[in-house]
Length: 388
Image: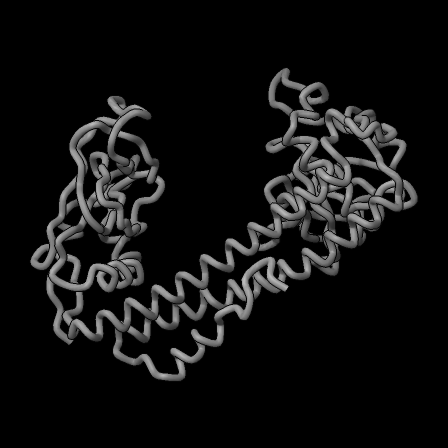
């Protein structure tokens, strides 16, 4: 397969505009290295282009724009007037640029990419018909991935709207639900204090810390371990239905433990809340608390003397609107069905992303087959989100 340097088949420029001179009334959108979009009254690029941030948070990522006019800021590279199919070059860049990124980065504090790293990048020279075919297939796969992500987003929005319709804003409590303290609806306690001096390795067990607790779920691929003796195992064990909540960091962030691991415990930075299920259900509680924190409900409970945190005592005294159990049960059933559908979409998204990676590798090696294309066609949804 013949290759050519990108600099020989394309025009590569860098942005020049000063972000401090931008304004919302400007004529043209322009991009920073962080892919922030601003407005400028002068100096624009025109037509479709590949955009490559040369430093900052998005260094090494590749973007494509079909905007008629736009701007780019300083070390953001713009690739245009390509003597090949632009989408084909974009997809090849996207699939292969990261492999050479390590050798392409310079700088100690902030990595950046030099112009010659881009101009010297090798692009395969294939017949135009083949380029179009590859670009169409990968564009289709990318579109399906975007559809799956949108479906997941719509499900999240659906649950938010259902909650507000059923229960209203938990901070204003305009529906006048009875307010109860955490102490009245369940038991709460902080986890085990981390003391590295006392970790001898006799009873090492995984535990949750602040960074492992996300909204509505857990990140379990980087769990740490410490010793938990028999007494600790009773005191700091986790059971299905426990709500784990962050004491600091993003205060109040919480999720329901669903026995994701056979055995796991929790550190002092985490509150464990065991609800009385005759009063409050975990599915309702976590969704309610997400809305409660979002609307500033925690502001009067959070200490700010040094680092903001929600103490165990303050959590116990925190008052929340608690609607009738029958209504909570109805909402929990909606959550269960929605989460089941969301899990299907997430599994489908993962399969599509794996398929996209496989198609990319095969496409640029000339190994695409009819079977591969059929897999992509089979991944198309029969109905769109919301259709019966």
